[in-house]
Every structure is written in C-alpha cells, then in structure tokens.
Image (cartoon, rainbow, N blue to C red; front, side):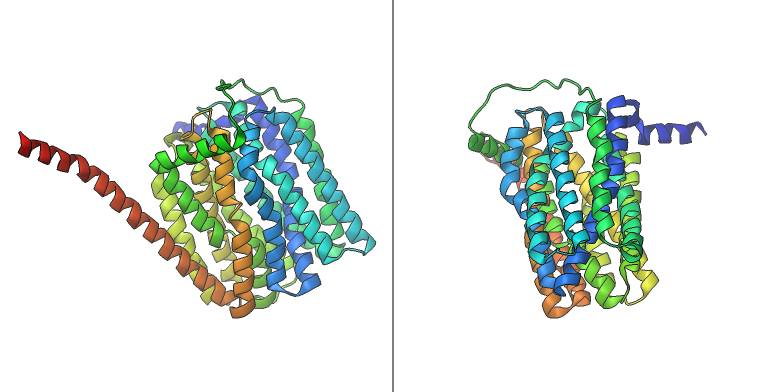
Length: 424
C-alpha cells in the first residue's frame, strides 16, 4: 500500500505547486474545445472539397507559420513576460474560433475561409507554443519539470479523448458550428486562471544579442550536444511522416471504415485514450528522468503499427491499432520534449524549445502535403504501409550512424595513446 501511495505521489508530484494546478485545470477545459475544433476543421474541409490533397493543404498552412516564425519567437520569448504573452495569444485564438462559428452558422463558410483561419491559428501558435512550454519551469521549478511536462501531456490527451467524442456527437446531432462555438467559450477558464498565477523567478543571463545571432547560438548549442542533436533528428523523422493524424484519420474513417461523423469522433477518441495512457506512463517514470530507450523504442514500434493499420480492414481492430499509435506517439514526443528541456540550461531553454517546435510542428506542413498527395495517388491503406516502412528505415539508419560516430569517438583516444606509446 505504501508502495502504491509513493508511486501515486511520484506520478502527480507537480500538483503540489498551486500555480501548476491552476494552469493544468484551466488548460483541461480549453483543450477539450481545441480538440473539438481540431476534429471539426478537417472534417469540414474534406466535406467541402472531397480532396485528400486539399485536406493536406489545410494542415500545411496551419503549421507553416510555425516553420517560418518559431525560431524567431523562441528568441523573443526569452525577453518577454511569458504569462502576458500566453494570455494575449489565447484571446486571439478565442476570437478566431468565434469567426469560425459565425461563418458556419451563417452558411457562408468556404474553403478559402478555412485556409485563412488555419493560417492565422498557425501564426498565433508559433508564438504561444514555445511560450507555454518554457513557462512550465516557472510554475514548478526544474526538480518537477519532467513530471509537469508529462502531466501536461495527460491533459492534452485526456482532452483528445473527450473532445473528439463530443465533437462527433455534436456534428451529427446539432451541427458542426457548435464545435467552434464551444472552443471559443473554452478559453475563458485558462485565461482567467493565468491572472491568478504568480510565476517563480528563474535566473537568466541578461546579455542580449541580435536575434539572428541568438538563433545561431541555439543551433550551435544543439549541435555540440550529441544527445540533443540525435533527439532533434529523430523528432524530425517521426513528426514529418507519423504525426499526420489530422489528414490520415478522417480519410481512413471515410474511405476505409465507411463511417460517419460519430464513428470518426470515436476513432479520434480512441487515439486520445492511447495517448492519455502513454502520457500517464511517462509521468509515472518521471523521477528517473527521460530515457533514450523509450524514445527509440516508441519510434520503431509506431512505424510497425502504421504498417499493421495498412493491412487491416476490421472496424474494432482499427480502434485498437489507432489507440496503440496514439500511446506510442505521445510516449515518444513527451520523452523528446523532456530531453530537450532538461538537457538545456536556463539561458538557452526557450531557444532550444523553439527549435524543437521548428523541427516538430514545423515539419508537419511537408508531412501533410506529402501524405495528402500520397493518399490521393495510392489510397489510405497503401500510404499507411509506405509511411511505416519509410520511418522504420530512417530511424534505424539514424541509430546506425549515431552508434558508428560514437564508436569512432571512443576509438580516437585509444589510437592517440597508441601513437604516443610508439613515440615513447
């Protein structure tokens, strides 16, 4: 019993910080709304266009601003008050959700409206995501940072269970416009909570350089750290090809499973359930620190799951496989995020996180376009198989190169000693 209590305390230790509790519960409500909109947007876009490629274009435009701006915003985030920055970004996202709901309610929504609103969301997210991630250390300090990151992932994925399930029912019963309206209202708790948070003071180096020099320093910092570099390269592979669920799952639901909005919502919720369990699993191991074997194992396993999805046509087995994909994807990203934050010192953290988002979310536009075109030409099932095989080959190749470099570095001192011995 004492062991179970200790394990429970270890898994949720970040909740001992009042600031984090306020932030966590506010985000939970907000993210349910966000996931309702995240499910509704691609379904709406595909219903209007009937084109997998154009569905990929929506995702590409939403994440392209992150690719373009995230490097610059990371350097600026270090200089600004993160709490006020997050409040401003959340207000803008709420206003965009209101515009979405009004356009759908009025019946005047067109595909170009979706493209514009998705792009604006991406611009705001390019500022908000690095700020929110680097803000966590100001809520809990460094000792509980990994636990807080993992618990943050649990709310994101708890919302991924609840939001799509509600969205599927709402879309089928009362209309898709209400999903966007609920998202607009869901920002109220998190914005209100942010006004009651008093962040911890984290010492920083006040030396300021030009933005481009600070970005260059961030890249050099990562390249010098082999652990960070391998993590970033692996994230680029998995994010570019695996993290395209916003394109793949609507197409899989409609063209393979032949299901409606409710079935699509349940499929997304099943992925959310797997993701939630993955985040909880990482949270329970947070005191032992991020582990490379989890990062590597999850990347290999999720590629194998994609191959199995491509060969599957059974409805209920699809739920299980998509759930497993969610579990592995979140285990991978939560571990990668923890490595990036814990291995970075305070002066570089926001810049390293912005580069992480540049690699992670910034690679999604290419992935969305690639996957959309792939599904257009070869179908969803073959695309799943091809993506799984491609990621498996790329990850194993990266690991082989990394291990070979490490072996050469270890061998170099021995060769040097041998030469010195000959001279002696």
